[in-house]
Amino acid sequence: MQLNLNRIRNHELRNRIVEPEEAATWISDGMTLGLSGFTRAGDVKAIPQALVKRAETESFKVNIYTGASMGPDVDKYFSEAGIINKRLPFQAEPIMRKQINQGNMHFIDQHLSQTCEWVRADVLPAIDYAILEAVSITEEGYIIPSTSVGNSQIFAEKAKAIIIEINTAQPEWLEGIHDIYDPGEQGSRKPIPLERPDDRIGEIGIKVDLDKVKGIVFSNKLDSASTIVPPDEETVIMANHLLNFLRAEIKAGRLTKQLAPLQSGIGTVANAVFHGFLHSEFNDLEVYSEVLQDAVFDLMDAGKIKFASGCSITLSEKAMDNLLVNFENYVDKLVLRPQEISNHPEIIRRMGLISINTALEMDIYGNVNSTHVCGTNMMNGIGGSGDFARNARYGIFVTKSIAKDGKISSIVPFVSHIDHTEHDVDVVVTEQGYADLRGLAPRERVGVIIENCAHPMYRKQLWDYYTEALTRGGQTPHILEKAFSWHTNYQTKGTMLMEEKEYAEMNN
Image (tube, rainbow, N blue to C red):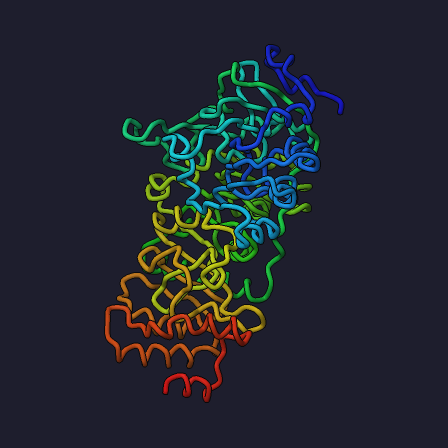
């Protein structure tokens, strides 16, 4: 590969350039690696490929810390090679998911704002190598990240050694859009001086101890494209329900027409619902989020969003091509921060965000499951949804009311795993409608959720469950021996939907 030495402006570091295969030999069995990358963006690519190649002839396992999910160059191929012992804090790769659920790999599902704190406090095993993708290294020795920041700063600070991967496919204009701020040690840190999404409070890159930089490799490959799909009829309807809720808040005097800074979680549904702002009356919007997806750039193109702060840029192939060609339209409207800042509770609460995240299922009292299918099988992870839901002005969760052609109801009597308790969920939205749960006691929420959000084919079944549960009493009435009957029915019969005769027999 042709080297572009202009990307390494600190001449002291130019003599540390090595091939990825050589750098991979420095990593041995049992080591812990801190890799750059956040939701397929800014992840290292050459060294992971070299490690996978090594695994063809050597047996070894390593612990992998990242910002969030990685592209197939890491999560998929590492999983296939069987070289991961423990992975944290988030993943979204089907093969890795299978390995986790089969017990072949340990996975720590963690709020994304907290990984830095664990690393900083030496709670986790020490990082042997921080391996970080960059677009360049400045004269002063700042590492300029590429399309994400993630946990790269704390990995560089705490790692015993650093390997930098200069990716020449990533555009050099990314230099200047980062704002790297270190809050410092808990117990001695000061308030984070960030008040608006467009504030800048840190450095242009990651300042490191140059003596820790053991090697620099070059790569030339763009990020893996996002797997999100365009909005469909149901997500368009969901978006309209969300917009109607916001209009009601404006009418009540709790919001202005400029709303409040918006946050949207990763994934197709959240992106599609966010896309609904495109044809709304709302303008001059601001975004303070973790992942900036296609919808954000579509809204910028339409003049709807004036500024967006995030942790990563994760786009479909078409959207990334547009960004690369028309970058001058976006550079003064973007900033990328470390995830402990993009997801920090202090900032989320201060700005009063409107937070929109995706649920797998929710129950009749407002508890939300974001992570586990039927209570046991990991899907992706909690990600940043907990950081935002608990601390935002509005903790909003969206999901389609049914899945698997109606065999699964997303509204159930009791969620099979709780990621977000009823205390953190303000509004739930499906294609059926929205339920504003604020100010409602548990028994008051039931009817609002069933009538506004559950699919009609499941409403009677939900009411029958709740009516029977009322005979048991309690703040949140349940029939414990039947609370998960919907899930067991799906596992044994392939559907949550019960015929009236079947439900009657169950009640006798």
